[in-house]
Every structure is written in structure tokens, then in C-alpha cells.
Image (cartoon, rainbow, N blue to C red):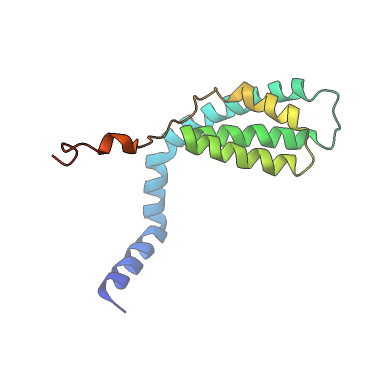
Length: 136
């Protein structure tokens, strides 16, 4: 085994030490509770709002609308801008293909996700490259 492999195994074994794990856990506990408290408050509000939106729908699909909204919440905390837009399109397709109402999915998404302006990519206009100063 290489030296770097032995070092990695040694570090891994150190992580498994109960005392070390306890120290790590104690150091992170306060922040973990803070994040979980914030997320729980947000998720309860999401569930209340989605419950109003899906009232009168098939009982079988209601949990899926909850899951859809929670996945949006997760993506918003993980992605931004174009990546978020792309991931939301994937999410839309996933839940539409499972038989959920497309209009309701759009309404849920619009409630939780702000509208982002379209991304404008730079386009090179070749007509500006015909002068002698281009490479100067």
C-alpha cells in the first residue's frame, strides 16, 4: 500500500474513534439544531400552503405534491440561477411523468421560486473583427 493510502486509512480509523466522533458531534450540535429548526419552520409553512392548493384533489396524489414542494425548497438551498432553472425543469418532468397535474405543479413552483430573468449569453459579432486593430 502506498504512503498516501496508509495515511487515508489512518485518518478514517481516527474518524471512527468514539471519543473523536463525540467531540465532532458536540462541536456541530448547536449549528445542526439551528439549521433543523429553521428548516422545520419552513417545511411546515410549505405543507400548509400546499395543503390549501391541493384541497379537493385525489388523496392519492397529495403526498406527491408535498414532496414536489419540498424538493423545490431543497433545490433553492442548493442551486442558483441557471442551475436552479435546469434542475426545476427536471423536477417538473419527473412529477408530470408520474401523473401530477402540470398546471398545479406550475402554480406551486411559482409560489416558491422567484422569477429569474433569462440568461443572456455573449454572442461574438464577427463583423467587428475585420479591422487592423483587432489583435493589437
